[in-house]
Amino acid sequence: MLKINKKFKFIFGSTVFGALIPMTAVSCLYDNDKTVIFAKTFAKENGFLDKQRVADPKNRTLVKFEDELYKANYLTYTFSSINLRFKQTRFEINNKHLQTKINNLVTISGKTATKNETNYNQFKNLITQTESNYQSYLANNSDKTAENTNDIQILLNQNKLVLNDFDTKFEILTNLINEYYKQNNGTKSLSEILKLDFGGGVETAAIKNEQAIKSNLSAILSATIYNIPLTDFNQVITYQAVQEVLENYVKDTPWATYYNWFKYEQSAASKSTFSPITNMLRFDNVSLTYVIEFSPTIINNGLATPVFQSVWDKVQEVHGASAKRTEATKVLKTIWEAFWDTSNSYSVKGDLIESSSQGMGSGFGPIHLAKGQNPSTGKEDDAFKIFDKALDDLEANEFLLNPTKFVNNNLDRIFLAEKEHNLKIQISLKEENIKALDAQIAVSGNQAEIQQWNREKAREQRDINRLKPQIAQAQKFRENLKEILSQLKLNPDNETLKAQLEELKKPYQSDIDLVFERLNNGIKNSATSRFGLAELFTNLLFLNGIYKTHAIKVYKTTNPAQKNNSTATYLVEFEDQGKWYVLDIYSLLSDAQKERDKVFNIESYIYSQLAGYIIDDHYVNNAHVTP
Image 1 (cartoon, rainbow, N blue to C red):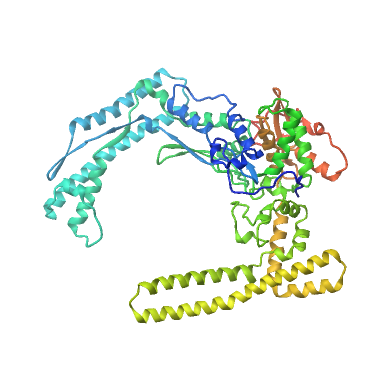
Image 2: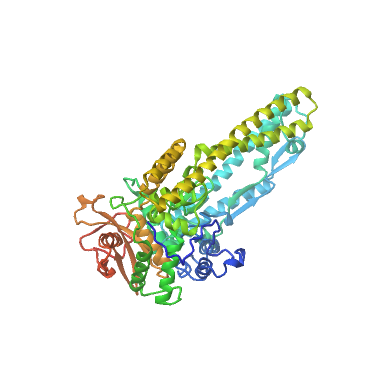
């Protein structure tokens, strides 16, 4: 569970600060809040902006796309949690900048449609010339990879499809026009048909004919093709070029953990059951668009803001206010000490190597229950409420220290789903129905209807009158419960008070049981995996100025046959002044929690070699520290 110094406000809110969102949108009341100060600092300097760009400067579209990535809002920071999560999760790039539109391919005159030979020949010639240019490009650039040239070939094939589609549709159109005027005795000109708006009604053979003519004719009045001069093949966007931009963007950052996993899974013969992210890069064959998506599947994956703020304050105090830092080991030691001071009960399931449902935020305790929020969405949800109102700052801290004890001491504040909440919903619905009936009565002149609606109003009002006393009774229950609990606090061994408490609870036992069922489930699932723990510390490093860090999966064995969950763990890899190291954060936390009075030297858990380990296949080509 979480231990927070009371000097840190545990402010839970919905305000989100993006790394590059103008801070003028934030109330001036919060200008000096640590959350805002950090967000402004991060916007100016961070591990992404520190990178060298790799897009070919000659490729204007690719450069623009790369700029879009680096200008993205990649920090989600609220008063309750911080996360390297993108506000815009999807980025697209394609080759539309190389397209040319040929208009007026068909000439319409009265009842005839003919090819505009001048424009049609230009259409075909541009396709032929682009093919010829491509062959010359290949001859002059024999070093280009198949992946690059195959992507260009896709555009040329698209041109052929467009030409074939035009020819096919023109032939169909010719037959439709003949059928319309000769067999169906059509009377409208082709120009008139193009203007028709086909609504409902009877569809005669002529109308169906008109619909088909309009559809085919509209489709071939113009065509869009890829027109690539010989000098512009370096402007073509390819999968490899987009991949290079993406890889450089995420390389050696916490996002590399996700990307390296995704990249290996693309070609893996046997897919992993753990899937921390959706496809980060793919090609859409329909729109011929390259799509990058930053959409992790990890639930409850935020770092508690008070924890981060305490760590950040300590790092600032010890290492100065610089945004970028190079002495990673020293910074990591400070981070560990500050983290241990606030979160020494952070919970990790040792046998849970990775999990999509229990992200780093799960290790801090069931904070979502204190706020009645769905941990998957961060939004208020009745299914996760255990209190009638969300706890405030200090109450949330106290709750996390001992959730069960807090609920038992505050039974008068629990969420009464059946005996109160559902009744309020029923009353609200009935009151809304009465308002709707009043509105209908006000405009109706039908006395029979009015009488029926008045009877329905009366029934609804009787139900409301029946339900309201039950809600008042629930409120009285809370008041009586609060009084007994306050007396028990002074006399905890008083058997008479205990008996009164149990008797008072009986009518509400089902609601009380539901609260404790939710609480126990919340506590049970409020532990993260080794993956979540490692990701937590890569985030703490990255956000505190150590820009090169990510998590890797390893096996504590030298026998490939023993690569399984019993030998698996996640390590934090980081660079310190040009040299790479790994931190065995799980062993450090586990040992420290076993002997809480002992001071542990973090350097004993940092290695420059991985002797006795095997690196998981997902990371073997990306890990800097090797066996």
